[in-house]
Length: 380
Ligand code: MG
Image (tube, rainbow, N blue to C red; front, side):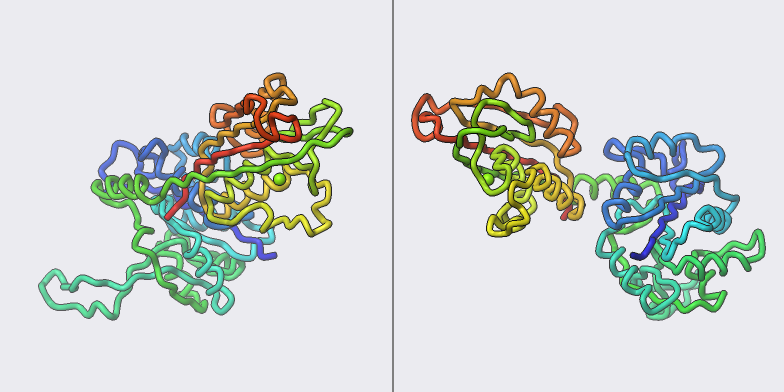
């Protein structure tokens, strides 16, 4: 497995953004720019180490890491961006890092596909950067036309083989600064490549960029509502598992796995919200590996898929339909167990119960049914 690190450069003062605090700490849609960037990087790629390079004067980064609940550590950078990256690379020494991504904290819209393109490109070069063509006509200050086909707009993350870029920074004289890290790599003689950048991955630079970022945060996702339904029959003996909670009532639910209809409906609701089929597609009942399986594992699988998609589970609502067992005595612990499995706070988890007024199979106490609705915020 390739060990990949992320260095987030967040030590700059961002004077062009004309803000009272450095732009990476400015709040947009309830979170600082740095937190948006950190969360998007975390969603886009599995990094083994995350280093945030901050200025000595900044005290907010630790709180941001805490709020984002992402394993990252802060180190103090230098006077220039180059010095800060150097400090970040140094902090990774001896950690067996294969690849390192170096990214500006003021680019909150990094994507999974860009990270994948960068990783793939590292198979055939020492360093790679996202780049975009220039579409506007270019002129020099004196009005002379400038050939736009000869220039590219560079973005971050720029990705490198760690030992190569660390060596390049090692030989760079102290105080020498470069426009970006790919320039340092090229000057050192490393092989470099460019991959197609992404217009959305822009850098917050000027005051008007905050409005653009705010608009993107308000519109770069859709709300998906997934629905799940499941029924299991009662059979005598054993322990019933319902919503991940054991219930000793003298009978249990019959099925291939532990037959937890509550967690099955919930798993199907989440898979439905992601457009990923149903529980049977991923865990066929014909596969003996899932015999008597703890259904919490099915739900955890769906939760992993939410993360893989870069989505957020916002809320779940579950209704159990049965005459028996009585749900009320178990409701609080069911809710807590689901909250734990879904990594949600309690107020985002609802467990309800109803009967069918003695009608139908639930009324005849032959089994129970469960319905679930999951609300997800899914990136476009
Ligand atoms: Mg089932």
